[in-house]
Each structure stands twice: as C-alpha cells, then as structure tokens.
Image (tube, rainbow, N blue to C red; front, side):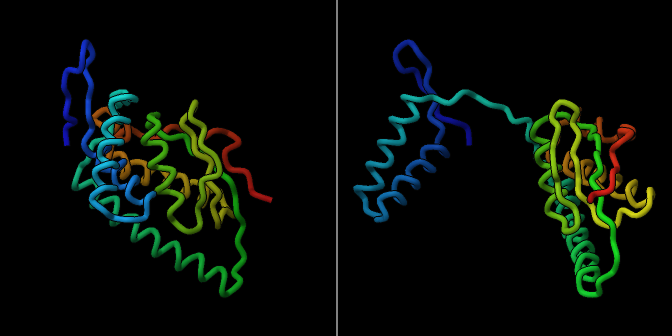
Length: 195
C-alpha cells in the first residue's frame, strides 16, 4: 500500500498507513482492552509518532517472483523431509558420522539475500549456519556426514542451490543473473572437520 503524503509547513511528511495500523494494534495490545477510546487514542498517538519521527525511505531490493517462491517452498519442504529422515536414522540407529564446518562463498552480496539464504539453509535439519561474513559473502555451515571430500562438495552444492532458489524467489534481475553464473571456488581451508 503506498504511503499517504502531504505538505506540512515547509516539509513534506509521509504517513505510512500500514505502520500506523501496526502501531495502533500495538497500542491496543499494551492497554489489554479493545475499546473505541483505546483505538482512537492509539490512532492519534500513531499519527503523531509518524509525523514527529519520520522514517527514511528504504528500498530493500526485495522483489517477489511467484514461480520462484513456489519452487523455493517445494525444495525447502522436500529438503526438510529428506534431511529429517536422514538425521533421525543416524540418531535412532547410532550410525557413525563425522561433522564438519565448511565455508561456502555465495554469489550475491546483498544483505537481504545473505540473510535469506542463511535462514533457508538453517531451516533444514543437519545443517546450521555458524557464521556469515558479510565482507566476503561467505557462510560457514556445520554439516553432518562429512567423511569424504565428495560429501563436503555436495554440501556446498546444496547451499549454492538454496542460494539460487532464494534469489530466484526474492532477488533483483542483477542478482538472478549473478546466480546463473557458476559458483566461486571454495577457500582452501573451508572444509575442516569439526572436533
């Protein structure tokens, strides 16, 4: 919903209607009673707060691509299911496994895509984000089943696949073009076994 803007003195003020509604809801929740008086005073306080403390315009660079969102959701559900079965099997049957922490350089450097990729990777059982280095766009992931170099490379490919799906769901055209390129080579010490 576009914000409502108007001239107020020599300055242009913007009233963001979703923000005013949200602040009004918070006001009513803080008072714990839904009355007309609470709603109206919450509305007045919200408008005053928005006029007194205007927020700067921020473009997050978020674009919604319906087919990309469907593909990401499908892949996440599939990956969560298969990973949960794998982790459960290892836990219940005591199968031996060796964990590792791997560094995976990502192709997109925007904060939004780094965060979205990290959240998507962390939602899957068996893989957890340990660290995100913003300067190098690298995520460090704790993975299970890291006995062989092929398994480490498969874990990296899985993170790159998750990044590609995330960017195709929420990224800009430039970011989508960037994930179409081959991934960067891994860093030399990026696959150390965890103690």
